[in-house]
Length: 167
Image (cartoon, rainbow, N blue to C red):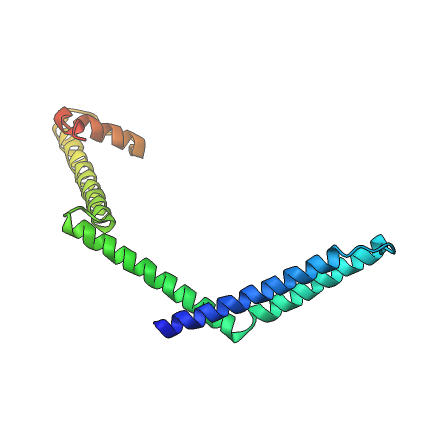
């Protein structure tokens, strides 16, 4: 680990040196004033030259294997840190016996499946009751199939109020 730290420190020092050299050259170019001051066009050309030099030096620096290796190492360390903190938090939740997000998602999914099965079964029972009433002549058979909204209303009316109030 010490060798990695030393290598990273050397790369940071090289980066800092390059940045300081670029900044000092820009300052020298910008703040040189003589009695024969350059024309605005010459200053624009100097500025353009400085930006081109900066762009090429940064492009060269960003394409170096050292920079790419350090970025790769940084990304791997960030991923490992994220995984480590995730594992730590999961272990802490487990030790406190607190539910994890996966636990909550599983419970919600199971409740939704149970609701669907109950509603399907209630619809089947409602159709059977309608058929029995039709056979007994208690009620006239529906002429059209109820809409989903009407089915929900019928289902809601048939659920006891004590069940409706459960949060």
